[in-house]
Picture 1 (cartoon, helix red, strand yellow):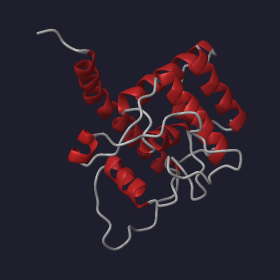
Picture 2 (picture 1 turned 90 degrees about the vertical axis):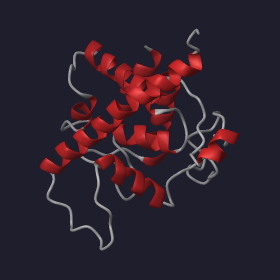
Picture 3 (picture 1 turned 180 degrees about the vertical axis):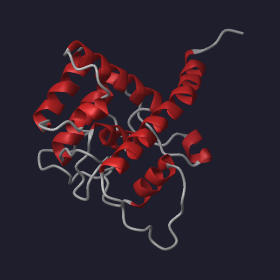
Picture 4 (picture 1 turned 135 degrees about the horizontal axis):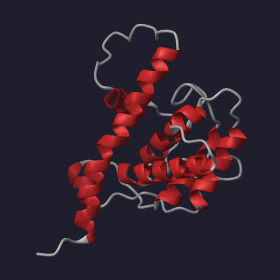
Length: 196
């Protein structure tokens, strides 16, 4: 029986999803070594791996942008022009968040728009005002329902290739947190990676 494209996409997502989770965990571990210790967890907070804590945070963050909000930017939402993720029958049955299919280049465009709308930060995934680092932008765009972990992983590969061509063969998170880095540099990198 021939393998269908849909089956390959599911297999690829199952393989690459853990890689993105591993990158988030590695980033959080590195950031924890660079920053003073966090305050003690709230009473009743559940321990767990970094991906679990991120998922909890996203579910508890009622101010995080989602496609049904249009008040994030005066000129229009950061996802303007992209289809709104709509739940399919499978999404309803499996009680999962709906996703809108996007390419890796479109994912980079959405990340660029998200950072333009909410701001950019260093040394953490996001801050209390909604500003994000590059990895935080990946997580927020995925949480809004655009693409899959496999899409985000392909986008990260495009970013890494763009950094290599520019003479910066370092991990994107190291590049993001380098002293002297600016939001303009980040936008330039994301646009270069999306068009290469």
